[in-house]
Length: 290
Image 1: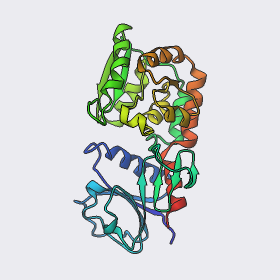
Image 2: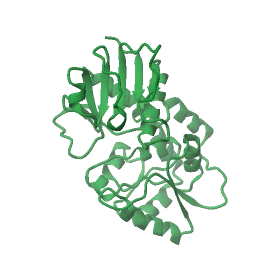
Image 3: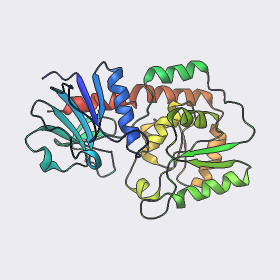
Image 4: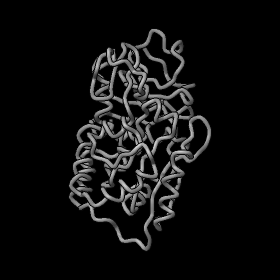
């Protein structure tokens, strides 16, 4: 079966944090020349020919997804019994518990015969990253020094406040305004990162312990900003082209030291363009789909 149709059965954009992942898959499939649809449980399917499609979905939005023998499915946290007898794989993020005895598909990407473990990626295509590099890495004009954080700030087992707080305190000591927002449009996101003085990708305690690699790193680097992380796995997947320290207070000063290294920042963006876009992630999925 030749798959040249892709269906993102997903979250409408900005309705959920996972909608940004579905947007990136949608954009990448279009760039790959697929006939691509972004549908959900309220979509009118009359008139749509979904034969021989590749479906991507997530457990919170797969209630009314068409179940077809002529299609294939990439499933994130979905109930396996629902898709029994259909050609499918599970999709999970890479973590430190992944066995390196499994089939290695790419760096930090493994397949155990049923589930593909890989990090998320930047929302930009390689051509868009190259466009940013051609524009140059000079920062946009600003009235003040800012540190941009786009995402969740929280406490608890899966929270990151304990890890962010030392970094925020060093920002305050050095006249850098901490600015945190969530769920903003893509263009605003990129503009905020591009115009910021610093833009860290700091992982919370649980994430760090389990080797979670945040997509924020790939995004920030692809936007032409210095990568800043307390995660050893994130440092390694970026080939060390970042400012790194487990101590997030020290990390602030490592970032200050590295932020003018435009050669490293350019190499990091090129590394993401080559290895960490959704084109790469889709290629990995196609390699292991039954």
